[in-house]
Image 1 (cartoon, rainbow, N blue to C red):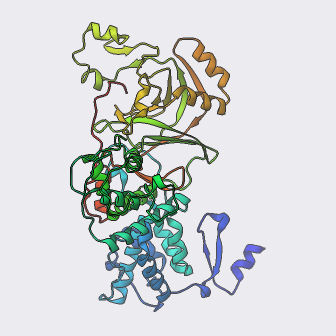
Image 2 (image 1 turned 90 degrees about the vertical axis):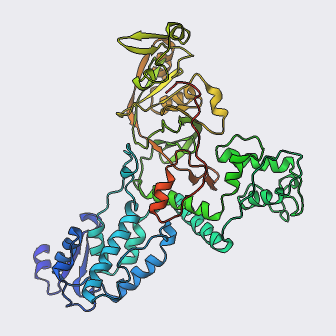
Image 3 (image 1 turned 180 degrees about the vertical axis):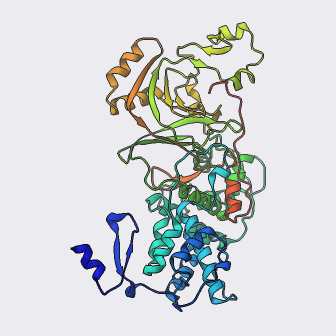
Length: 518
């Protein structure tokens, strides 16, 4: 009876399925914002994009854009700097010199392009990386645009497409702040080269202190901070221990040896201006638009750019620790892959790439010294505390032979720059981390028994724990502040250039042959 009543109603209705049947909106057609003029026809020959053809076919080849929607779209584009997209033009958005019908189609094309950039990123990460398996958002922006135009809610719809989380908002605010600072300051005057150590008097000291203050590592001289944390007077040329301590914090953040000495690598970071940081933030915003909007509440995120691991349990960060990741040339790939079991006392089967590379000429004495044997043509390092995998391996389901594991070289975690492995992820205090996961997953007894065997033993997890290997060299730290790191793999440049930014001189990490471990 209700359906019969609905269909017999004298008021025409438009049923909009915006978020599934449960959220269907029934809107009187007369109340919908209509294009102006309503009867303007669209020539099918002017619509070559298959997505737009579908959109206009639904409107019976009538114009889609009202004055209200045009104004809303122009306002949204004017505000695209919030998303780091202000260096891009969206062709057709201001097609004022074309006929009204052609302008309508051009505006729809620009709106789809902008909506796609917000919903999933301007760039397809799979086009930049040989391996990229992180889940991406799936949004039908063509259908969404049609609904938004029909209901007069274009502004609300566009604002809903980008990530809505606090980290994205913080990065967005910082991008606007640094962009404005860069526009006001103009080009940064580089500090000249040459080493400076504590106790040295050098005319560059004032500029160094100024850069440290601008970056938040040193308090301005007129503030209420502790005296030792204050910037020196603008006329001081003495490089003090207080300045060196502030510089160490910057060096640690950027993955440079934290020795407090002003050297070539440190100067390259000090010479980064507001524009360079805005560029990094723009790339950071794009990378986050690539990610699914609702990640697993319980997961492990490894930030390979910062060599850092975060463990989330039910949406809350419960653990954070250092990791060692792939060196340049053996980059840890961007992938999603779950841990499905813990391996106590693992052996290590050396990959053929290492066996035929760094280990191509090793002799029996080398194998014996490293507790290695040949088995069916493969070099296998036997279990024990000196094994490259340490005492625990976190087995992950992927076809890249990438996993988390312990290490026999824990001293490497004390380094600022920890891009040192062949691609796998070495975890600080991996045994402690394994115990934490085992307890959280209810297999602590089985895990302790496996360790006690002294043999390689597998402990399946009752449910897989998702792991995301992310590359975020600009992110929000645990203290809520924006953290900047170098671009160790040089992966930012292709993204930045496609977003319309200039090239950068930011430092990359250099490969360091530390050991042959995974």
